[in-house]
Every structure is written in C-alpha cells, then in structure tokens.
Image 1 (cartoon, rainbow, N blue to C red):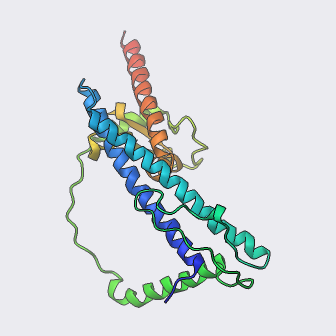
Image 2 (image 1 turned 90 degrees about the horizontal axis):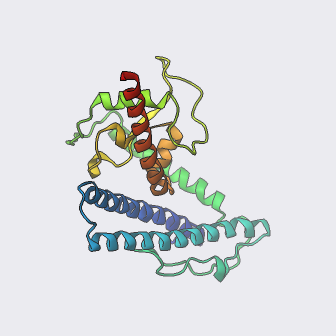
Length: 253
C-alpha cells in the first residue's frame, strides 16, 4: 500500500531519531576512549580527535535535517486548519543532509480538509499496531526468551558512598525538581549512575558517579543534550568527591 505524504514524514522523523541515537552512542564511545588516554597521561591520537570532530559535525547536520522534518510535519497541521495540506520548499528537509538521511518528500498536492491529517494517521497506525499485538499475543503471552549476557561487576559500597555524599538530593545543578516522594524505606528517589559508562571504560568509583533524580537520569541516558550534561556531571562528580574527601580528612584531624 502506498504511503501518504504525512506517513512518509512520520517515517522520516522516526528514522532520524534512530540515526541520532546511533551517532550519540558512537560519540560516547569516542569520548570515553579519549578520556582513557588522558587518564593514563597520554596524548590524544590525532585520528581519534578527528573522528570525534567528524561525528559531531555529522550529528549537527542530522539535527538540522530532523528539525526540518518536524517543521514540515507541523506545516501539515497548520495548513489543515486552513482547509488544505500544503508543504513549501522552506519546510522540506534538504536531500542528503546527515549520514544516511532518507530523501525529502515531494511537495504534496492540495487535499481536502481532514485527508491524511496527522491525527488520522496516528489513529490508523495505532489501530494497526494493536491488531498486530493481539494477533501475536496467543503465541507470546507468558513466553520467555533465553538470553546470555555479561553484566559489569559493581561495588555496592560505591553506590552507598554517592547516595551519602548527595545528601538525598539530585546532583545535577540544573535539576528541574526531583520527586518529593520517598521509597518504602524512606530514602530519596535517586538513581546512581556512572558519568562515563563502565562498558566504555569508566571507573566504578564515586569520582565517576552521580546521584540523579529519575528525570535527570533519563536526560543523561537518552536526552538530546546528554553529551553536554555528561560534561557538567563529570565536573560535579569530581568536585563533590574532592570536597567530601576534604571534609572527612578534617573530621579525622
């Protein structure tokens, strides 16, 4: 079945999100590799620095393409209010921008009000997805998939130290507000996360760990600004660790 212009835009927005996530993972690995060289007192290889710069340029290009795709989709919604769906050249994503970017859609013809509207496409897609879920449910309900994986060994005392250091507050300086509720044991609702992932070579040590509320943890994990936040949290963790160490030393004196 041939896709409508609105459905094509939805597909392109979703694909661009996937591309961004892939590039962000590559950037995280590249940054971790460079940080390891620095921690060992070595200079950063030129090819690694160039590769990281290229990844960041590709990400910026893809972000621009994504913004144009979203703008084109919003243009449909605005045009529908006027009784027709139109798309001008200024709202169409540029062809070929970003790594692997799908082609921009052709400008759609004028359509009567309500035809191919984003709301209608969403409702139709939702019904199709639910139908597929219900069709597969008899075979998948209660089923389990065997999985073999390796989980990094973590020291629970490192987590305990970070929670103690945080004083029960999110350590992100730009936190918009953590939940006022507490756990069943009366503890603050906080996640302890590694600034540099263990899988990427980060230390399982309080100097590389921060206590975050669920919202800030989500931003740090999958937010579009996570690399910027990671740099902030790296400085926060190091400073909080240094300050806590000095205070402990003063108490012993």
